Image (cartoon, rainbow, N blue to C red; front, side, top):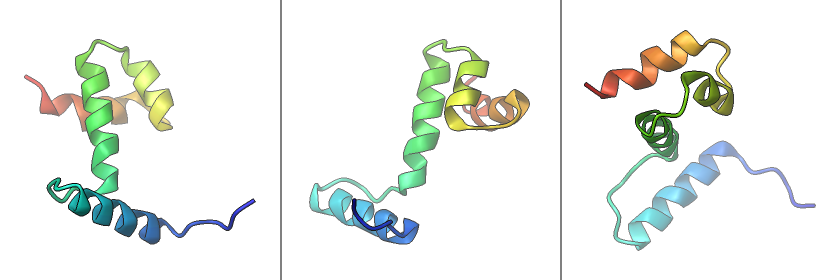
Length: 70
């Protein structure tokens, strides 16, 4: 087994890989938001998205991710 990774090291490495790939700077956490928003836009039930993200309450998930769509 390998050693545990420090979260900042993973974030820094992701940013570096995005830079090397010619992509704009984006935080690793932004991918989570994008995936949640796109999943909801595709019609997946809020409860499924809530459980996937590990949120305790679906109201939090709805408040956080449904505001980006009309």
